[in-house]
Length: 71
Image (tube, rainbow, N blue to C red; front, side, top):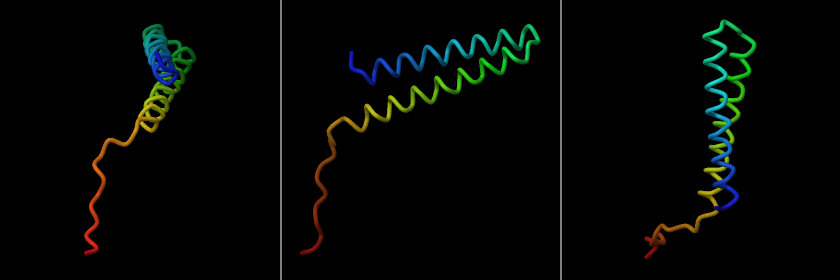
């Protein structure tokens, strides 16, 4: 498993943990726990996206070379 994929999976875990914490805070009426969960959820989602972009940028460009219309 490559580093970026591990980072993406870790971000997904953080995202899920934050969602659970946020929901628990909402159900119990604890605004602080709800806010902490929201923060973890957002951080996890950002971490996932950064790892995804890094992985996409590290892939070789698979597009066909563009032809020149100079002639």
